[in-house]
Image (tube, rainbow, N blue to C red; front, side, top):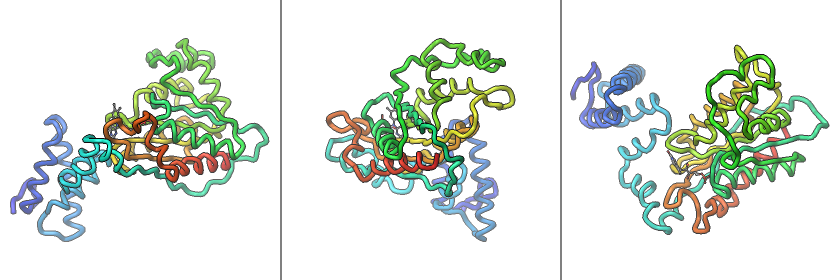
Length: 318
Ligand SMILES: Cc1cc2nc3c(=O)[nH]c(=O)nc-3n(C[C@H](O)[C@H](O)[C@H](O)COP(=O)(O)O)c2cc1C
């Protein structure tokens, strides 16, 4: 047993603790270490443990970091499984086809319709993936089919194909007078109008390097133009959203925190997310495209159906 920062580590506990701490650069290492040690001491107290083993270190660290640290824990817990699930798919097409593809539809509390309206139910979808017919796009298409079956009029915009400049941070869009939102002359002018007219908004994006892809970040920065001082939005409440995230790592909760973040940004803009989908397992040679360069999800109709059902339910709660 070795005592480090008042924590009595068993031999495997100490080894794993050192390994985990070493993943962070020195400038942030100590603050992470402090948090893990704090959680470890709480766990020891509540469970009346005398020493800390490997599993407790991993459990404590999981409480400190988001799920996207999973690959590190998976490597520590079972290296053989990690190689099989994560590295083999890059070897050849046979290994690639074995990756488990999964779509998860998020549970949400039952929701009452805000008001029964006879006006057209307009749904606009923004696909932040640059890959037409990729997995994000396929899920959006399926959700739109469901929305249409429930009586909505739909439109899809590929963010990569429009002329969308970065926000320039001038803050002119915060000045009174709605027209000021059009400070940058690009396709967003028309898109602001579409967002105003829509009752339902679908946002789909792939994870790039552990967060939403840049197209979605830019889009949300530009959306900020709807906000006024003290978060008084000029967008009237009542809009609902569906958020769709896709990624390679074959676990359906790895990037929940990124989806939650997008949901929170939309909430800030008074758009309530009522449906969310996570789709995973698009790892491998072509990052989730089959040999014909179409999303592998096309080969998983049962998974795709979840997007159709979500799209239908989305419109039904308008
Ligand atoms: C630049 C880039 C970075 C990526 N980073 C991650 C990542 O950090 N984690 C992950 O699980 N998948 C990652 N992926 C995989 C994609 O999220 C995944 O293949 C996604 O489903 C692609 O969506 P699409 O088919 O709609 O284009 C990355 C892909 C690219 C191209």
